[in-house]
Length: 431
Image (tube, rainbow, N blue to C red):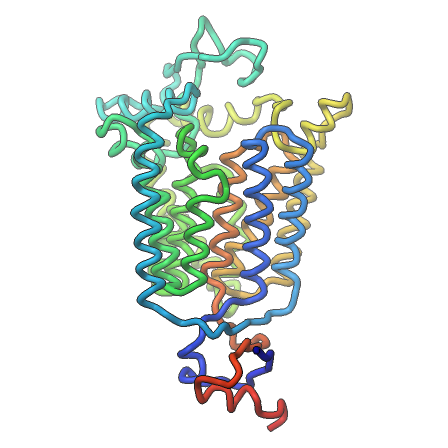
């Protein structure tokens, strides 16, 4: 038998024998599961049912941000068992990941560019140089690249991702497969999640990020989003545990991929108390870290760097196989959603989260997951790797969603009660 009661001003002793999960975390888990379903049935390619599931995921994300802050206490608290379960989960996933990568060898341009760029950097060449080209493995009918970028079977572009990605792939490259570096990133993400919240929240969140958003499929293609999720996990972890290192982690996250800049306005939520001075100072320090990572490559060949990271992206055509509403409209003969329309939707999402979301690392991650979902589902290119990042951000919204003293606390307790905490829960709300 069980009872649901409100607990007023609980002490640490009251909370000691319980595990907590808040409403935002539960809704983030729902968003991750809906998104995982979409990716499992489509692998990130255009599919009506998958688009519907992504829409459901967005709805869960909106509810996670706007609903009141409510925390539930569960009468389950076995730290040793939870730690053992996490270690078994991590070791099992590592073994599965190694085996999967050894038997799955994908043919994709991302892996070719990663190998070429790691090789070039290790041999003293600029991977972003204007003269750099890569093998084109696609037919002209597939329309992967923009006009004028393919010449004699070669793609005229340097490495199309930020320098941090090249540096991260080097250990895997030296071991014979750049994808090993991204497997390590996923493992480290799970460790950061559980280290920040070593309870049921952390265990569930780690399990979700390891398996639900088609993680092995993403690793198999060598997509770079696992590095993004890892640096985002580091940002959330430092915001909770080591605030002095937050600018470093945030700067590395902003250096992980171009669309990480969506986090800049949402970084307000990382500050417990907002002031323009503290917010701008955080961005300045994070920007200095990002500059330290990127500036050497910018100075090496400014024009080549700009073309590879920005110019090349601006002329990419609409992908008719993308898991987005723009692709769905185009397939049925309608015009895709204009970029200004996508921008308005994203701005609306940012404004909503800044007004409604609490100022916590969990809310920052959940809000970024929601805004990123909006950015991709209405855009011209949206595939499994992009949605994997959204799922990872939403997992972080669950992992760091502990008890919020400014919210409502509800406890699900056994009857008869096993701890003195029941006396506080059973007392009348007004004493």
